Length: 450
Image (tube, rainbow, N blue to C red; front, top):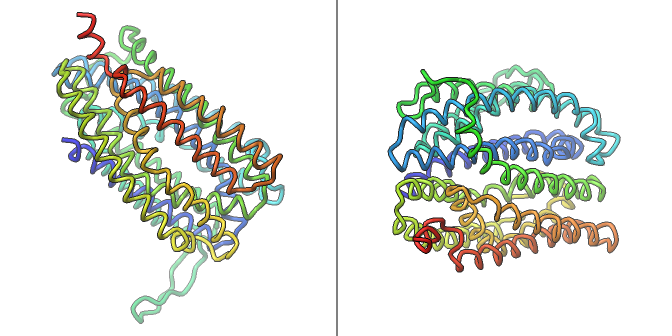
């Protein structure tokens, strides 16, 4: 059951990462300035996306529990409320991102020579926030109903559209030689703007398709349900989602502050950090794929009131996660320079990026424990404790430490990533203690009360 739920999510994330790799390589071929312009505002994008994902967590928790209890009517009613949330949140973030697109590069301390380019890229990329919100929240709802294949297929479609349009819009018309055949390939020659348009169109296609599939789903389709606010459903969903939203908002805001301090180190550090983040994301795929399975199965077990299933899930999935992260961390350590060289021709950028990647590779198995424990706690609706742990680590360790290391001591990018590793290790310690105490499992507490 774990791998049945996890592998589609892993494949979906693998495709997303592969496309991110292709994007970075294509944009990287335009020069270091283009890479910096695209990467300089990416953490603001994480802030937006994670805030929407947090709302999805509230629906994941209660759809998974209703599905585990075989209460399909309640699951469909919750799904109907998800439609309303998508509409409200999608329109709200469209207004915010487009209205602030000119200010974001300034807040991020982007070099003045690329602020205009970064601003236009950000504006185009975040115009389709309504379909992006649909992709995130409806995809989460489908996973909660044990349907991880549909979001995977939609993700593959989005990525294919993105890659094809990248190829046509980034480069100008040119002559290609494939297997000895020479032909003229038309192209728009829009550069960085072409990459933004390709991504925006891909997100739009994905949002439309997943909305259609969600509406026709045999279990949680909102067809025939009241599309009016129902506080009996929204209140508990928001109660779970709010701490997770504050957590993601706080940590994403921390990422913004983190990236802003790195941007202040100069173009080489910004480019190395952007590429290293892209490379690193591929090696977290096993962890986050298993997190999705952990959240869904924990919610199902709680809905079925099956304490033994909940305990056996934790005993099995944690060792699996650690083993997978040891393998991925080892590969990252060995091939860090090779991965960096895929995205940059600058020896300075490659050397700096490889250094920080090898540093973080050592901490991956420890971070894997945190990923799984957080997933299980989200599945059972325990979102306050992860909020406290993550905010403490982000602002108490990573941000304060990075400020001291980069702005006062002059340790540069390596010092900043060292603080990120310290943050990850703190999370490992906190989640491990919480797991050993058994407080994460609401069925333990109910049994004790009984």
